[in-house]
Length: 169
Image 1 (spheres, rainbow, N blue to C red):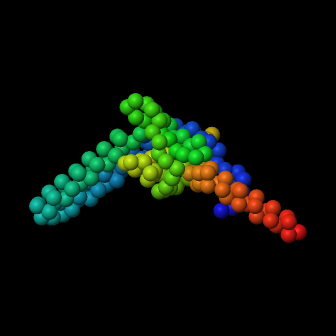
Image 2 (image 1 turned 90 degrees about the vertical axis):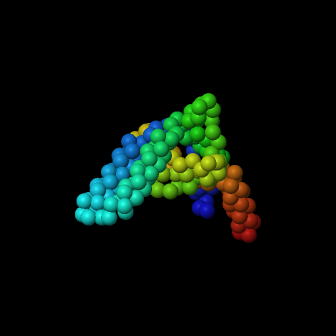
Image 3 (image 1 turned 60 degrees about the vertical axis):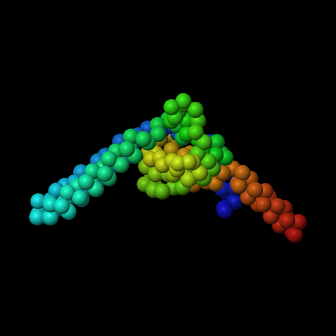
C-alpha cells in the first residue's frame, strides 16, 4: 500500500442513489436487440419449437432484467471511513449496513457498478456521476480505498518504519 494512501484516507461521503436512466436504457436496448435477432432468426426459417423455446427463454431473461432494475435501491450510499451503509432504501427507511468490503464490478469513469458481498443478499448498485458531480471523486476515492481500520494499522507500520530509519541515521 502506498504511504500516501495511509496518510490520506478517503473522506466520508454521503452519495445520492436513484435508478439510473443510463442503465435502464442499456437494459432496454439489450432486450430489444436480442428480441430483434430472435425474431429475425424465426423469420429466416428456424424450427417453430426451437424458436418458441428461445422466445420463452428471452421472455424469462427480459422479466428478470426488469425485476432487477425495478428493485434497485434508491436513497443514499454512505461511507463513514469504516463501513458502507444504504440509507432510505428499505421499507422502514432505516440504514441498511452493507459491510466494509465493496467490489468494483465496472468502472466507466462517469458510471460505476459496485457490489457489496458482505450484505445478505449481495447488494448491487449502479452509481453515476450526474447524481452529485461535486461528491463523485470522494465516492471514487472511497470505493478504491480500504477501510480506515486497516489504514490505521498501515499508517502505524509506516510510522514505526520511519522511526526505525531515523534511529539508524
